[in-house]
Image (cartoon, rainbow, N blue to C red; front, side, top):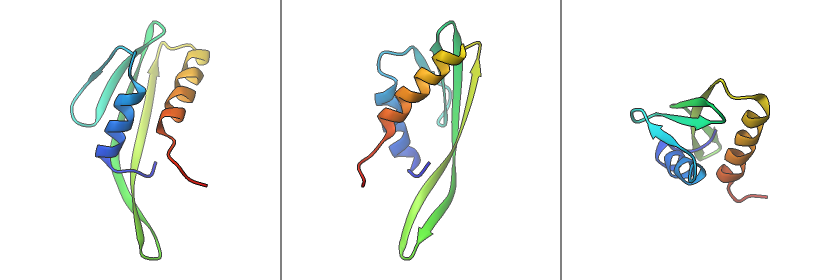
Length: 88
């Protein structure tokens, strides 16, 4: 994903409104979903460079535990919609 950690945390907090979740340190959250949980953690990756433009990157890791496939898909769709930014 191309964003800085602070930007990701703002996007994530907005996406998690209405969900039962807790931060576990600076780069991890645990989210209760459909009788199971999702542990999501992130770490900065190398910047991508296009000519003079440098874009920060993040590596994201999703670990679902006891969440049915349909609920996983619904949450990922929800998260995707909340993390989209403008563009052509």
